[in-house]
Length: 337
Image 1 (tube, rainbow, N blue to C red):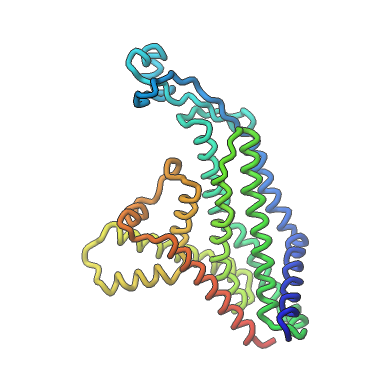
Image 2: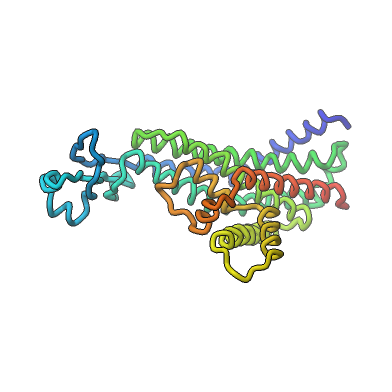
């Protein structure tokens, strides 16, 4: 068996996986949800409020336009006091159905929405739903009534498994790109703000998904059960988050009574498991969200002590993902059908 045949089988299974997403309507469901988010973004508008001018050499100080004192003094009163009228910007949603007065400028208001779209909609809800919806792809493929036809072909089993896995990653990568680029363009059209940093969410979100999907792949090969893949992966995510938070909480608070052996075990668990909290920090840094979202205090304290190394955290997550895929390939190779 030569490598070209193995790659041919892998490419064929990638196409089959994409076709499966069409047949199961999952492709269109995710595309529809992304389109709804784009329509929401098209309905966003930002109206700049009036601001009193300040001299170039003065430090800009003032009160929000909706502050009771600002309302009482008015623009002339604030000007006499040497203050600026801050805010007064209007952020409209739903094509003007709802209007919010904000103290942020146009660009910051748009970036605030982008942080929520990338962090909450795509980064939390999106990843969870995608893990659930794609969990059945491999167990269905590994069913003995289907896979025996494929493994009888003169191709290595690893090419069959990784063809299916890469097909899922290609599908998720397309959906992630469609969501991020689509909402970015929609916000740009409606507000005139095109912040290129928002596009950095694409590789970070895909990395986050692939790390936990690798665990789902391992469960699928060992159990061939969609239910086990779904609940097992979600419980594993909770375990990883707890380990991630617990390690940083201990580093931040330095509680008394913890033995060096316990600290060492905590560090081993932290580095061995995926780190969803650290991946969220990577996303925050990529989008430069410090001014728009409140960080977890324990994470911030651990970072100030230089006990969080984001490049090593990403590398550890990639190594874990590779290990899980390797274990799955080894088990698939040994499995009897």
